[in-house]
Structure formats: C-alpha cells, structure tokens
Length: 130
Image 1 (cartoon, rainbow, N blue to C red):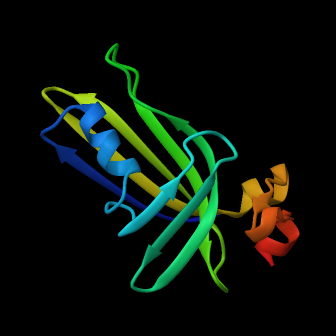
Image 2 (cartoon, rainbow, N blue to C red):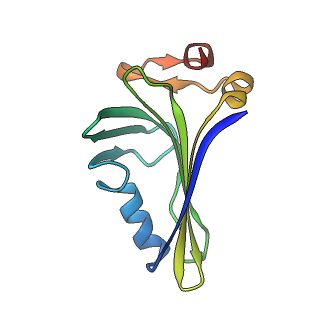
Image 3 (cartoon, rainbow, N blue to C red):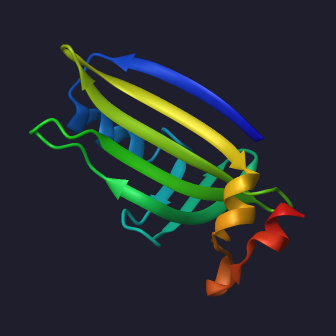
C-alpha cells in the first residue's frame, strides 16, 4: 500500500514558464538546488530545516507539447524518504501541475531503489523501509 498525497493546480502560464518556477528557488522550498539530471543532487532548506535527496528523472516540457516531469527522492534528518513526482502539462490555454508525494514501500522492497545520502553514501531499501 502507498502512503501518498496528491495535488493539482491550474496555472495561466506556459509549461516552460511553470517549469522554471517549479524547478527554481521558492516553490518547493525557499532555498532549492536541483541538478536536473538522473542521479543529480537535490537540496532544499526551509524554516523546518534541510531536506536532501537525488533526482530520479528531469525532463523539461517542450514547445512540441511533451509534458515536463520531475521525480526526486528527499528526506530530512531522521525522516523517512519519500518520492515526489511533478508533472507540468499544457492544458487548453494554461498549464496543469500535478504533484504526488509518496512512500511506495512496494517499489523500495521489490526494485531495491538506492537512496543517496550525504557524502555520496548510498542506502538500500532495507535501511530506508525499516
């Protein structure tokens, strides 16, 4: 069973404009650093502290209509890691932004997806799912 939260927004802007906001500072956290490629580092700071993780996928929307997709894992100190997926897609004259944050235990247990930690250390699913 997945523990997850889903939200959807409609924005009166182009997918490229929305992508720039979603992947920049201020939207996910006041201070955000994302390396927008698979395996890239993800770092976020807000009033509650710092969350770190890694980027699973990052594909910007195109003028040809391909939706944008950002998926990353993150966790704060002493928190369980969760996976965040953000889809940015043209809809009519605006853009739909869909955000899903989940802790999919089945993926961690069956696929054995490694989670990166500070200093380049990698943690396997047994440490994360425990």
